[in-house]
Image (cartoon, rainbow, N blue to C red; front, side, top):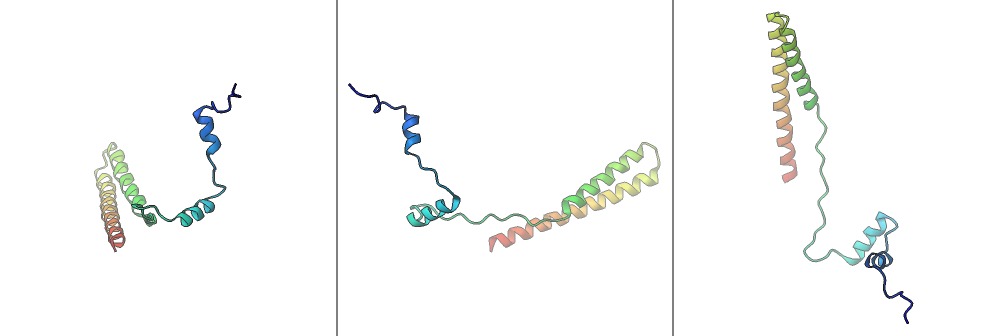
Length: 111
């Protein structure tokens, strides 16, 4: 008769055979020791976009345009036009600046 040890559940057998690394450095050392498998390559470093003020300026422009609409319910035409115009100018300037920054980032990444 057998003791039943050869009849283990697959999950239990797999869990006993796994060795988890102690740290990320240990994983890096193991990869460096084994080398990169054929067909694989080292990943390129991620590039984060540089911080900018354009989203905040665009939000300010939208706020001024909405404020102009809200004041418009009081029927003061000059205030509506002034606030909406300021908001529109800020919105367009932010849109142009933001798109310009994105285009410059793409040129830097292609080099």
